[in-house]
Length: 452
Image (cartoon, rainbow, N blue to C red; front, side, top):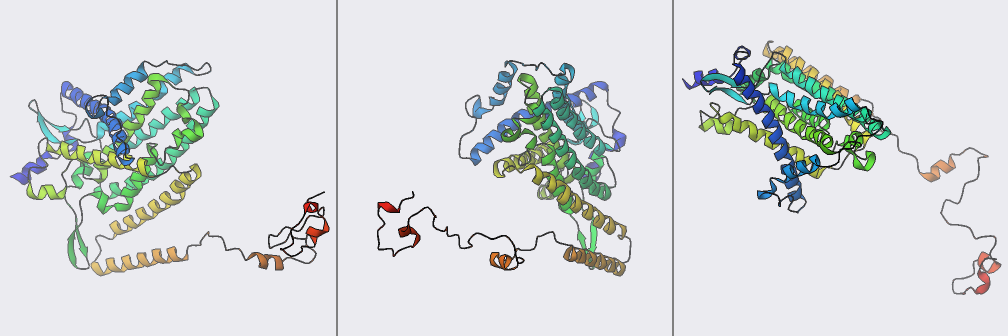
């Protein structure tokens, strides 16, 4: 009976689109409130954690434990002077910050917060909506958020915000490619692009035949697809402009970059969009790789009802908070990268590794139905080819330079004269003979040894 009940808790695509209008409105308000409150608490959480890492108290004056400090900062920004540049495009300048916030919040509409529950007598999933291509909706929302940054820099009517917006768009588009490719492995393994279907696919580990042994593979894709998880999370950090990839807001280089000309509430919206994106991408990472709202294995082993009712929301929020802590941890630990290092890392490291990993995974998926000897032979051949390609790949390391004396000896006859190689400066021709002849050290030079 418990197995049937657990299976009935998993929502499917057929469970959406049947809710009354007021229940849909309640779900939308809940998703918006979650994004807003998680952002406000996320700012306080980051300042407290970074303060603990730096051995200082952090915000602790406004409200208990400083919880109202973020609210006080928001009120302070609201009453600051709102300056509009004379050369700005007023309409685009006003709407650019809202684009980033709206896109970040919209992505939460396809994130499952829990299983099917009863709300005022209606059996409904804890998710606003779901579609067969829900993950593409997430990618579209994260891509549309780039427009807010680009338009904000362009509409300011100034050179430095424009350059900051262009640099930001190049960075975010570059890491959007790595993020999209890392999700391909999830599609191939789960067999669906629906977020609720991906969570359901991680409920139970698949059976694997490893050299005659039947092994149950982990259910979470963070373990089963570890390279995709690592690349996805790194791309997420770069996509949300978080340290060490916070180059769009590099104050030491760009004077706040694309938001230089913004103030008051418009500046607050840009800052809010960054934290909303951080919380949203943490929720997306939880959904795609950490089993979504399902409890970890140690809890489900001794508690059969851990994945039923309203309890799954607790596991979901705990996973999101853990990922937000990792975001804060990175900011308090790693220094900022240079822009060329950052772009080189995205295009020349993450992208090739992602493509090779997808090729390997596709090969393993294609030979699942083969006989065991054929499967072992194909795996051995593929591993050998990959090993040879790794060993024989041409290295770009420059050849070491020969010693300096060898370079001097190899110069052709008649070359220009070289300065002394022992780094000893010859005596000045303007000094008197007592210095030029270099008498013994016990002879003290008189006043006539100075230059004339």
